[in-house]
Image 1 (spheres, rainbow, N blue to C red):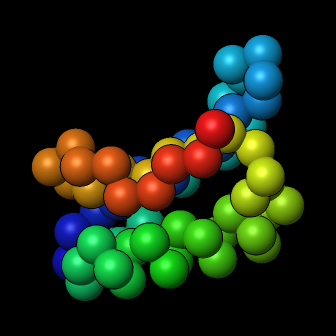
Image 2 (image 1 turned 90 degrees about the vertical axis):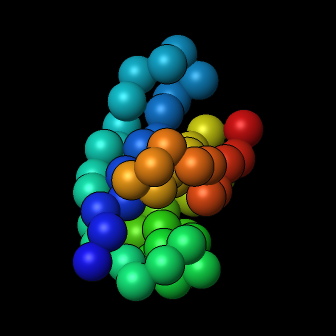
Amino acid sequence: MPDYKLTAFEPTGEKILDEGFEAQDDTEAKKKGEALLKEKGVHEKTHRCVSPEGKLILFHR
């Protein structure tokens, strides 16, 4: 399974979440990424999720 990278930031640019996870495809990765963000309480912070190829799957500013 491909490895996706999920990162969240404070407005100062400080990284507050930096996790990798596996998913079958981009659709599953988006769902898993959103769930992880909510679980960690950072879904309202600036965040991004990228695929192993560098494709942006999730982004919130």
